[in-house]
Image 1 (tube, one colour):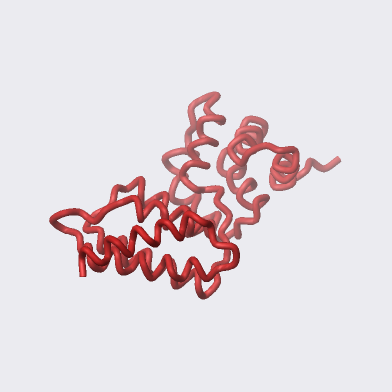
Image 2 (cartoon, rainbow, N blue to C red):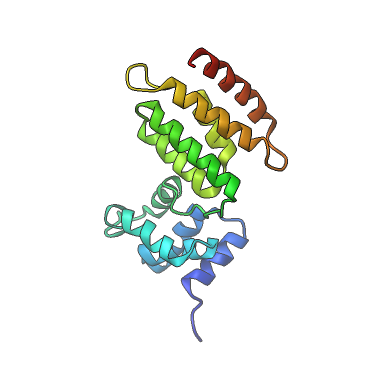
Length: 187
């Protein structure tokens, strides 16, 4: 009798309510094959194969080549936190324009913490533009290296575009008001 593929096992684990990290840990523990287990979870989630291979190449040597014994749960959680299991969402032309304005704002910040940038990249991938917007509105351009005028203007435009999407989050309207106030202080 043929054994089910790792991808089929991952689909089953996910269908039973396991998180991607827990599904990875289950497969890696069972198969003793970390890399194929991580790829199987990606494929079961709907991450395209080429994208999964690219993502795994970035973390393979550090996390999956020679894992510590009994580290499958920790590794799964780390892979999930790194965004390995994030399912890409196709963005509409309006959403792509919003991301372009976000990137303009990021450039105008004059510097960004790596963790903040990682979070933004994950939100762009998954299409969570509201979280990205609120995060950028809560941030500030750097005093010496940032460009406040460009920063706040880009966020005003992004916020205006986000309010035109179906059922915009009410927090966007409040954040947009804050951006407009900052933009008038930095004409």
